[in-house]
Length: 90
Image (cartoon, rainbow, N blue to C red; front, side, top):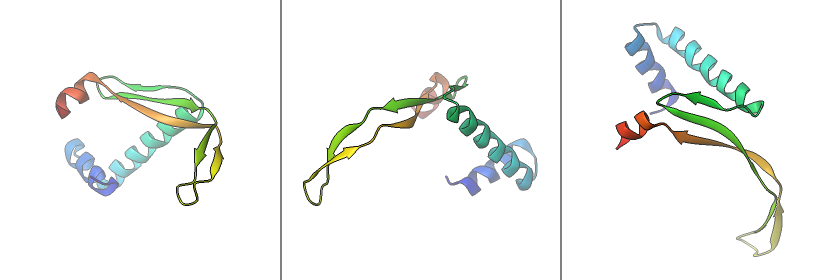
């Protein structure tokens, strides 16, 4: 499912226009991104939890040349599925 299909699904389920569904989805995604940017956790009970984790700097290898390279430290987004979502998938 892509973003367009998700918007159509939301519009149908909530009985609202596609434009309103798109605004709601964009606002939701922006709110999640803003919270994660501030190193906060976003928990949607039953769905899952988005969190930010720090990945340490490490040494890697360029697969084309075999030469060692330094990979800088960075923050990564993690998602842990909630129990209801896991039950639906399984």
